[in-house]
Image (cartoon, rainbow, N blue to C red):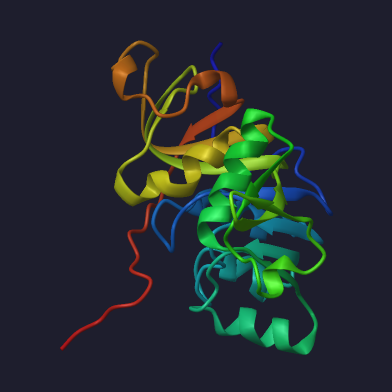
Amino acid sequence: MNKVVKNAHEAIQGLSDGMTLMLGGFGLCGIPENCISAMVDTGVKGITCISNNAGVDDFGLGLLLKKHQIKKMISSYVGENSEFERQLLSGELEVELIPQGTLAERCRAGGAGIPAFFVPAGYGTEVADGKEVREFEGKMYLLEHGLTADFAIVKAWKGDTHGNLIYRYTANNFNQPMAMAGKITIAEVEELVPAGELDPNHIHTPGIFVQRIFKAENLEKRIEFATTR
């Protein structure tokens, strides 16, 4: 039951070229920065990243983009990364933009074993291109499919040696549904405690979904952008 590994490099063993990855976080909040740095070091390439956003130029997924390690981004918000913009406009990067709520639900559905569902978001826009449309009670809906990944890589506030996880505030947004949807789920945590120390009523992701866990080092609390006056 002890799922603890030494560090990020050990945690991402088996991750190889061409895989599909889910990476948790919201903006720069709750991103698995240690595992991202380890992926930069390994030089893995041709990966498809499912993530709410693409980081910024010098942090988060922006580091992988800079090294041209990402083949495709499946995202919701990508407005803070100039390298992402450059690669998209030049045709170097494949991009699938998904409404934010739909992205979260597609991850949750994949983790719950739900293959597809209908949502109204995106009807009448480019998001609907090529998708089945059905009417329910006078309203039009699009068929969307659940998402899964070879690896789901998440960041939690606290975790125990059995892989049970607790997230904090905004970091819960995508980490929780993604943790359920990976064939292998890796969790980097700010605080790692022995099994039994976490209050069961506060656990967001049960350890059954997590295969590897480690205590993160070199934690950075970056702000995506600052607004001042």
